[in-house]
Length: 153
Image: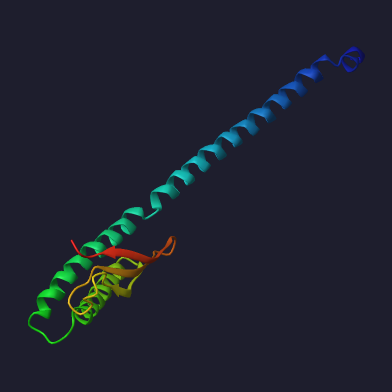
C-alpha cells in the first residue's frame, strides 16, 4: 500500500486528461461563438432596406417627371402657373407615398425644396427640382437632402 502512495505516475495522466478536456471545452465554446457571430452579421446585412430606398428614389424621380407633364397640360386650361400646379400635385404625391409606407411601419418624408428653370421662363416650364427624401424604418435612417431631379426629358 505504501508503494502506491509514493508512485505519482497516475496523477500526471489524470492531470493531463483534465487539461485536455478543459482545452476541448474552450475550443468548442469559441467555435460556437464564431458560428453565432457569422449568423448575426449575415442576418444584419439582409435586414438593410436598400431596395426600399432605391425604389423610393426611383419612384420620386419618375413621378416628378410625370407631375411636370401633368402640370404643363393643366396649365393650358388653367390660370395658374406651372410651378404652382406642380407644387400642388407634388404635395399630393408626397402625402400618398407617406401613407403607403406607413402601412408597412416606415416613415417617409418627400418634400419639395425648390423649383428651378434654367431658360428663364419660370411661369411656363420647369427644368429641375430639389427635394428632400427621408426614410426611417426604425432600424435604418436614410436622408438625401437635397436630391436634384431633372424633370425635363
